[in-house]
Image (tube, rainbow, N blue to C red; front, side):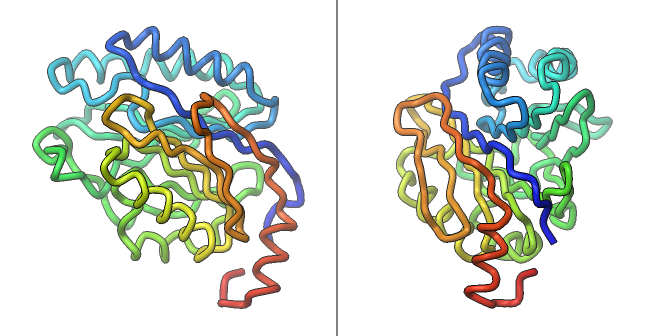
Length: 244
């Protein structure tokens, strides 16, 4: 069963700049302007972008940024990705910050070869795409290109909320919209998608309900919708496809 508690879902849409500190301050502003109990999804690598020319600097900035972000969350939850260094290389890591802790980490499993990500990042483990809980809400994450892999949809079956932090190419904007809508309908859950609004990306951030109703950011930096667990229960009773 899902938690009975309602809370706010927030999708962000903004462009990363060359200044890591400026990006961090903008993200902190978005956090503090969100509801006290919000689950906030930010674009993929929003603090640095794919700054391959300064990869070490981006990795060095991540722990400092996380420490700052944790000071501003209170009871909020933040989901985003950041560049991190491990003993065997660089990873694009999905991070879930809740209250004063990092409660979930997962490296991106499917790298976007069209964008040469595989030349810079190590890939994570497909089997690490799993559910986790935040205050009784079952959650999952698909990082950008991972959205295209149907096996991951199955691995996240039973989620109440799936977050999709992305930097999705503008040439495939309709794909992003269609896939996030379909994911919510297929998995009978809320989908909170956040895409960067830099010129080359789609900016198609939005929130989709278990019934497939969508709201999109358009030009807004932040939109929100109330997470209603009864909507999930109602959809799964109405259209029984084996998800509980």
